[in-house]
Length: 447
Image 1 (cartoon, rainbow, N blue to C red):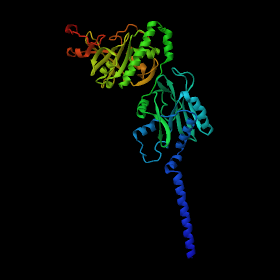
Image 2 (image 1 turned 135 degrees about the vertical axis):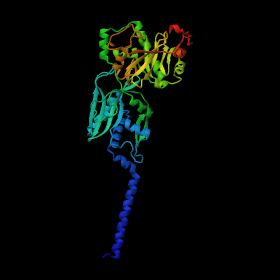
Image 3 (image 1 turned 90 degrees about the vertical axis):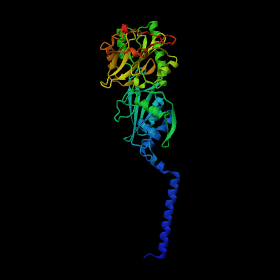
């Protein structure tokens, strides 16, 4: 039977317990925020913090380049917007990048420490690619007690871009693992993500767009050596001069078209030289590039002319067979615009004979574009280059042909029509050295 004294004692004890609990909660609340509880309870979060702490101690800059997470940051696509840990606590393998120049410090100060702490490491290597020698580490995956957390891709500096290799052992379809790739060198900002300071590309959206189109295919040095064994390299002064001129022309063209946001690729003889011999065809005397007509801009020609490029001729029109040619001193730059035939799925570029007004088309299977390195520069080429080259030059593409007629020699050329008399002044325009349009008199009997 409860007495008055027992009731008072029970209430006092209950009050004491309640007060103790409140004091404990107040203490915890002032020292450990619920957000921190959520984050520190995540194995991925703790592993990332440990990884970045070690990279900082080792003076290694680790870039956060994870395509999936960066996409979520850029587009705010994740649905867990109210969660205290939106990005760094997921059941996900997080991708970082380190530069090859800091890999020795990374290996000694990060990988060895994590291995000693029980992490399992798997590294992938690639034999030397063009411009790179020896066995090169390309990827490292860190596993903490069967929980994958960190994937590291190694960026190798190659002139104006970073190259990365594939990962033959990738089981998870990680980013940067399916093929060789090329990424423009970027600046990075240190920004907080879920309370962790990470270096991310200054323009993450642009970086992600570039990553999606980053596939790289190296020139085949074995094929080039075989070619020069059969056909010795032209090392004359004229050949060397032309080689340097081609490099200058492509560099100038790339700088200007990149500035205008116009992607282009190596085409025709310039592409053949890269594919067959990793070099310039010394007797070609021109540089050929391709541009999708869908990337043409109404004021493109005007923009190119204002940069100092001297127009030699303009053939065709935007709707059909457009071609620009620029006088580049001792060589010529041809810009061929490519169209898609919706009925056949074929791609084609046009040609115009200004003596006769006849129209020609050169047909190719539809292609995608990859990056390569040519004359020390990052340049686009059709990914299936051999198919493209065979379409243009036929089965004997490996054999040099010094006498080339653009109307008859190409394997894929077809005469399709003639321009109407009323169109001639628009579709055939020639210019002199001063940039003045040459007046032409069309004689119907000769056309």
